[in-house]
Length: 420
Ligand code: ADP
Ligand code: ASP
Ligand code: MG
Image 1 (spheres, rainbow, N blue to C red):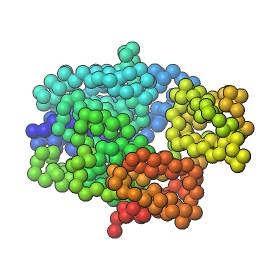
Image 2: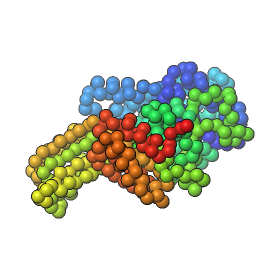
Image 3: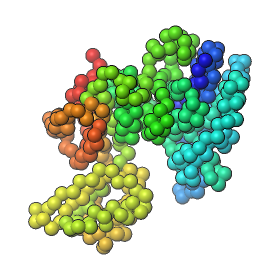
Image 4: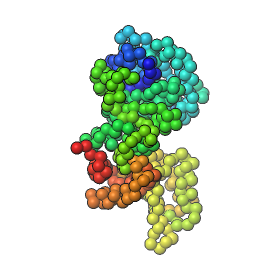
């Protein structure tokens, strides 16, 4: 008998038929004798609708009330799934974040889970009850509902798996695993059987939204074995976890690097369209200038990502280009404009039509020349690189958004990731 966490995303619970399908996946595990905690997202599109409503009510709104509204989507699906399971003769109960409780910090809208007091939940699961948990939510230090950031149900699931010491955490979604790149834009992408935590972390943080970045961070820290698989597979023909044949279910295991025998140089390609570029022209080229630019941005909680600095021909001034999250663009512009006299620049230019394309792979640690190959392949397609950033296991380039798909496809072929 295994203790499982099963998480179902928005498209997997999009309507009553889909919820019934989810219930059949759960029933299969219950019938095989497994204990289950099931984490659900809101119905597909529902959270976007709720965001729209809060904005419609007032463009400036209290983050605590934003969370009160946003958390409601998962309340609906957890209740509906519990009802559906009960109708199949399965003992099931819904749990909201505060009822467990899942304790978070006070950062409404993007709260971090700090502790899960899982005693009560564990007892009920051990008694054979299926716990249907509303994902994406917790309770803050002031007793108010918090939400965990978009895509946060993945993090709820991994956190519950860690708190319960579950044998595995299956993330059911609308694709049958993690692919070498987003299968929606590259039909030739391939499912990856096993991906290292570090690679998955980079893939997620660089734009592959199949898992929320924090969920991967948490899985890595707590060594939770996460498997991404499809809820669209026929529930009756999938083998239950722990049964003969369960290893052949198509999916991707996120695991330790050492558990992967065959390692590619580049495992995946990610792209992110949610960054904005800011260029400050004519900044004095002297010590302390970078601190004057990035200090006020840091004080306003803006995360600066890629940074490029060019020295001008006369060597006295420089142009500084960097990226910030697109959602922080206007705020960053205001911060920099009000610090203009202190920084001393001649002009500020901004652009939102840019994309960051990244190649990721732990194999890069031991291979030279990967970057050079990437840059020349992009040059051959006439794609101009506006900024570069690297780490041991990834290289990211900033390019014009119009070339996003071409760049992803080109790199996907270049590193031998295309399916036959
Ligand atoms: P859920 O609602 O189940 O949480 P998401 O929409 O958050 O699902 O994540 C699944 C989607 O992630 C897929 O439909 C796919 O388009 C997208 N995606 C982006 N990059 C990848 C990738 N490398 N592998 C698989 N899916 C990816
Ligand atoms: N419903 C939330 C969202 O759409 C959380 C999630 O789906 O994981 O972001
Ligand atoms: Mg998701």
